[in-house]
Length: 296
Image 1 (cartoon, one colour):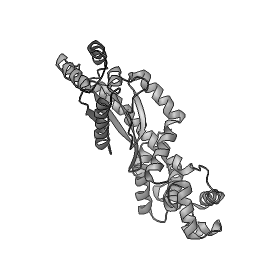
Image 2 (cartoon, one colour):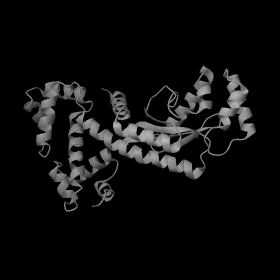
Image 3 (cartoon, helix red, strand yellow):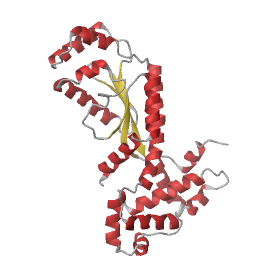
Image 4 (cartoon, helix red, strand yellow):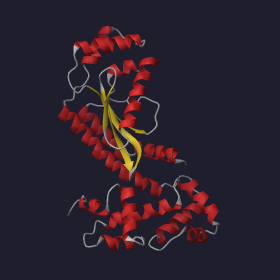
C-alpha cells in the first residue's frame, strides 16, 4: 500500500474499533455535538447524516452550491489542523474544529467536531446566512431556517476549549493504538511474510538486517524487500523499529531500568539512534514518555 492507502486503512480500522465507538458515544451524549474520525483526504461532509448533525447544516448539505461552500471550509480546516488543533468559521457563521491524529510525527487523520456558535448569533447574522442559503438554492422555508439557526448549540470559549481538549487527549490515545495496528497488521499476508514477522519477533534484540531475515525465509533480498513492503504497508527497517519501540514502551514501565539499558535490550546499537527513533514513532522522547506513565 502507498502512504495514503496505509493511513486510510489505519483510520478505517480505528473508526470500527470498540474503543473509538465507546468514545464517540460518550462524546455525543456529554456534549450533544457530532464527532467524526476521518482520513486526511476526504471529499465528504464529515458530519452529514451522523448523530447530532446540526439541522441547519443538514439543510445546507441539500444543494450542491451550499454543499461546495461547506466542503471548501473543510479544506481550510484540513490545512489549518495539519500539526495542531484548529478551528475555522464557515460563511454561515458556524465553527468546526479538528484535532490531528498522529503516529509519531506523521498526521494520519483527524478527529472533528463542530457545527456550533461560540457566541449567540444575531438577527443580522441570520439574515446574511438566509440570503446565502437562498442564493445557493436551499428549499427550506425562512421559518425552518430561522428555527434551525437559532437552535444551534452555543459553546462559550471555556466550554469550547474543554471539548477540544477532550478530542486532543483521545487523538493522542488513537495515535498510540495506530502504531500497534501497523505492527500487527497481517491482512491476507503470504506465509513468507508471516515467517519473517515471527523471525523478527524472536530475534529483534539482535543486530538484524534485511539480508539476514531474507535468508531466514529462503528468498532473495530484493524479492523479500518488495514482498514485505507489499504485505505490511511499511518497509523492513520501519517495521523492525516499530517492534523494538513497542517492546521499549513495556520496559519503560519498570522504573529500575535505565533508558540506555532498555535501548540495548530491545536491539538498538546506540542510545542516540534509540532516542531519535522513539521520538519519531512515539512523538516524544523516552524520558518524557516515562514521565507521563501512571505510577503505582
